[in-house]
Structure formats: C-alpha cells, structure tokens
Image (cartoon, rainbow, N blue to C red; front, side, top):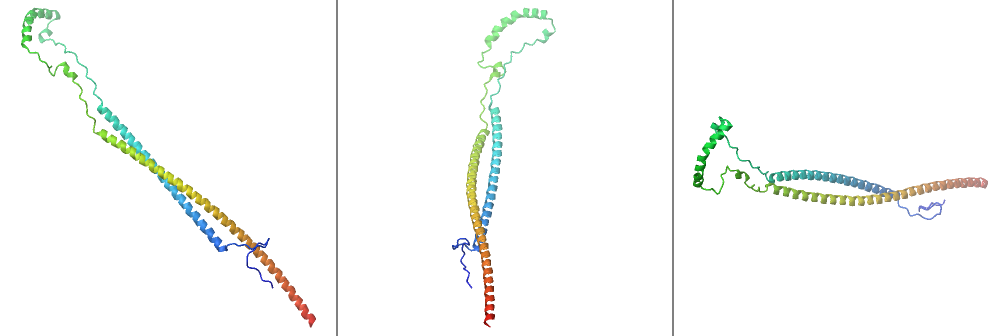
Length: 252
C-alpha cells in the first residue's frame, strides 16, 4: 500500500506549497479585527474632542460678544460724561418795573409828573456818579456772571478699566484662536494618521482573509483528492483480496 505525502502540494501542477498553519492565519485575522476596533474607538474619541473644541469656540464667541457690548456701552457712557455742557443763553436786562404810585395813574399823568421831576434828578445824578467808585469787577448778579467759562472735566476713572477690559478681550480672543487652531490641526493630523492606519489594517485583513479562503479551498480540494485516492486504494485492495481468494481456491 502506497503512503500518502504529508507535504501540501498543488493538485494541478504538483508543486509543493508553503502555507502557514490554519490556527496562525485565524489568529492573525482576529488580531487585525481587534486593531480595527481599536482604531474605530480612537476615531470616535477624536470626534468627541473635535465636538468639544467647537463648543469651546462657541463659548469664546459668546464671551467676546458680551465683552464687546459692555465696552461699547461703557464708551458711550464715557463720551456722554466728558461732553461739554451746552452754552447758557444771555438774558436781557430786566424790564423796569413801575412804581406803585405810577401804576395807579394814567399813562399821560405819569409822564407829566416824571417830566417835572427830571431837572432835580438830573442835577443830583452827577454828584452820585462822582461819589460812587468805579468797580473793576461786576457783581455776581450781573449779566456777565452767566458767561463763566466751562470747567474742563477730568476723564472718568472707568476709562482705564475699559481699556484693560478691551486688552483682556483681545488677549483672550488670540489665545482662543490659537488653541482652536492647534486643536484643529492636531485633530486633522490624528484623523489622517488613523485613517491611513485603518486603511492599511483593512487591506491587511482582506489579504489575510483571501489567503485563508485560498488555503481552505486548497485543503478542501486536498481532502477530496485524498478521499478519491482512498476510494481507489480500497477498490484495489478489494480486487487483490478477490484475486487471492481465487488463487487459493484454484491451488487447492
């Protein structure tokens, strides 16, 4: 009885085939699937980080809008506080009031009485003017007291605070933009790297699966060939047994 060869060979050409064992191929396939699951988990984690970065950027935008509105309101209040007051219009000289005596008299009688009294008042007026010293300053109740120059108002103490708030806002915005750019660049680089690794792992898994399927097909063909050979060997053994039986009968 001929012995069967244990070395794998091609059923068509007969050359020996160096294939890895089945358990090693299955182990490599399971390892590739596990690595793909790890890569998918990393991609989900990166997506969560990107979502958190977008949320932080929205919060920074809201804070900047609030600071801008506060600075604009403070600037408007400071401008209203530092604006010069409107000029006061001069008032005309007070209208001469009538004396109680003339108010009871008709207009013509009052004029005649004032004409009769005018020479005496004209004589006494120069003496009074000569005796009264000329005052270089007007009394506070005079009309010029209403045109006093406006006192310049000092800047409000909130201006420095507004400038500091504006500088802080600008620095916070620059920091937020820098962090967002760094995070976006890091997410893009990691995404590209992970996608490349995922594609490579998928390609490796496909190649391993193709090799495994090819090996299974080869083993199935080899099993079929072995069964066919065994059937032929069994048939040959049956014929040999029958021939021996016939020879033994004829020899007796």
